[in-house]
Length: 141
Image (cartoon, rainbow, N blue to C red; front, top):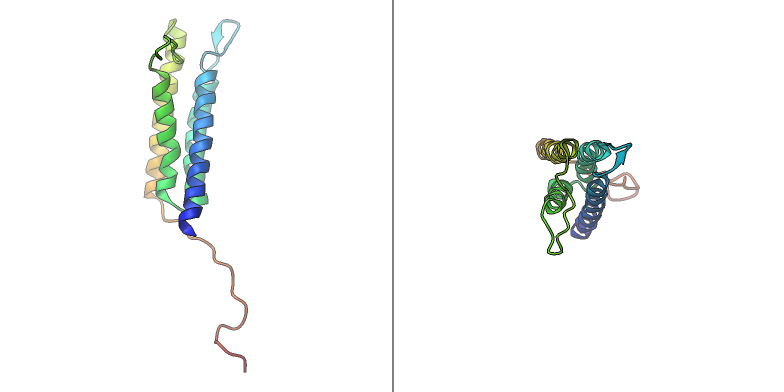
């Protein structure tokens, strides 16, 4: 039963982390009046910190806690590579775009590493067991 529970939390953690990383990558080129808006940078930091911590608390497993950070890193690095069609999700561009893109990668990785270190160094999460009915002595008197 514990394996199925961990598998479920793992799938959920990976799915949420993948969705959030993709959204962050697609938000990177967002501009208002020609000025880049670094929303992805903020969401990457907060999202990585929260997802790793939530995965650890909810699953009770340190291994499951590491998964969101790994998924985020894989998707962020994949966004920097040119596809066979020539598409590039994290382009260079002008100095402001480059600064936002590099900040996204740097601060996202640092936040993920910090969250993973905190999760790995934390005390194991104790699962609450339901209270048993009765006196616990094994028989009625």
